[in-house]
Image 1 (cartoon, rainbow, N blue to C red):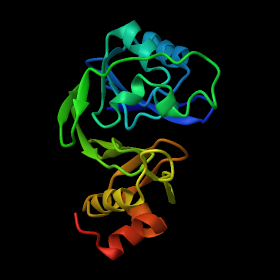
Image 2 (image 1 turned 90 degrees about the vertical axis):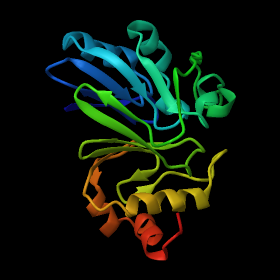
Image 3 (image 1 turned 120 degrees about the horizontal axis):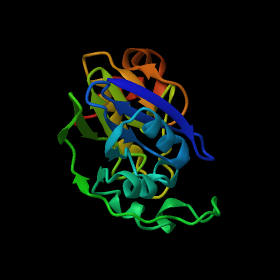
Length: 215
């Protein structure tokens, strides 16, 4: 499994392209803009985009979804609680920040949490982690977690936006804290880190673990 990182859009969102060098099948996580940059990499490496995985529905994570789906036929996968954001700019805080047209798109697969699917030879599993948005998810692949805006290096995503919940975030962080294995974390913004490092250094994750929120 290879991972190519793109920093895209005005809010510098991390977009990840995950692909298998043998089958050349690929999935993209959070294509939040810069469609041409992503498409060029796919074409130059002869990759076949199969999935568009979204950790949540905020506009800075979805702006290239419609174009990628139209160009490749890849299926759009998002939690059912955030699916409406793919079709409504108002729910995305979009109009107050961006000027380009908002391209609406419908999801192909609606998640509830716990689902699994194949990415080449690798299994992807989705964990529902509400807090930043009602439909936020973390995506597990091998020893990697794509955490979206749930967990950052030494920080977490905001819970004061529409649909956010501080209490839900605490429960979600507890579910991540309780994982026994170490993972490489690829967040929606900023640098990658590891789960063990965040258990030690991230005050929000550590607090969620120490306080023992019941799941």
